[in-house]
Image (cartoon, rainbow, N blue to C red):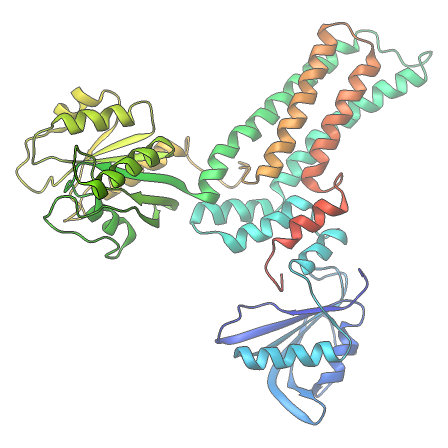
Length: 456
């Protein structure tokens, strides 16, 4: 039930310096006082203060603690909240939580603290979803994007668009109810102009989802090339450790190696594939086939060329595979005497960017980093006023709103009655409301928060 007092361990379940047990609800202070022994009662303490004492279970002292007291409504959940800062051993944390539950609290469900913050109006649904994105962030861009959403940049933009829509809807409805005093004569052109501006805003937000996916999920990257071109050496450099076996023997990599690496604040989900060449070796051929299959579905292909050896028919085959895709060619082994120059490669590859590198000497990696950012992040990334949609649910809602607004334009151009405008305007309004949580059902809310970690 919503009014239950809930509790959970809100830090990771591993031995650490400090662990936190969080309690939230109407009885949070009373429950804390049943197990806390200190100089003063928790219920009588000032809000946002910290108190030293001990947690007990009957006559047994469990741990020496610091207890933080936060009174409603100035808390994360909007409810009375107590956070017990314990020593960070998993056993002692469990014992403290057991004492809390024994004295009247209920074990919180995954995401229930954040769910209560949403239900109590402390944040909208887009901000709640940003909480889990902050926790799951795996690179600097993903973190900054999530923090911007948590501050309310999506909420504010969606509310601005919804306010514009409801203004025009209200005017039309009022005019239809009171035609003697409010005229809709010529209002179609006014509405069309407003709808076109809204469509532009929606399209911009939807386009941002491409950058948003890259920030959040990473770039699916496949390294291809002939055997012994330096693909595995490149993977080792990018990952920062010896992930792949490197030898002078061609065809060492036969299976697929996967690694997530950080490059210039972005995440690359890198797959190192078997060298692509004609082969009669059955096992190697399977690896080559897999390499070609992965390349077809990749966001980015890094084609590694051994610049110390001439190009051959295998290179022609690889170039045919990577054409018309996001591809970067790396002329590897540039620290040796080379026979393939950037100019020669560009004649063969056309518009595909070419960078001279040495995986062995770790040269050219910065240029690769800049080229990847240029390719996938259109322009400079700013989190001050720019919004990036990173959530597929939000993108779908924006697409639905966009279709509804396009129907408004069509109705105006087709000379349809004004009540047709209202229907599509309200559809767009409702779709956008599902982003902030003003037009969603209980089942969807439960599904969203069930994906959160325990204690958050």
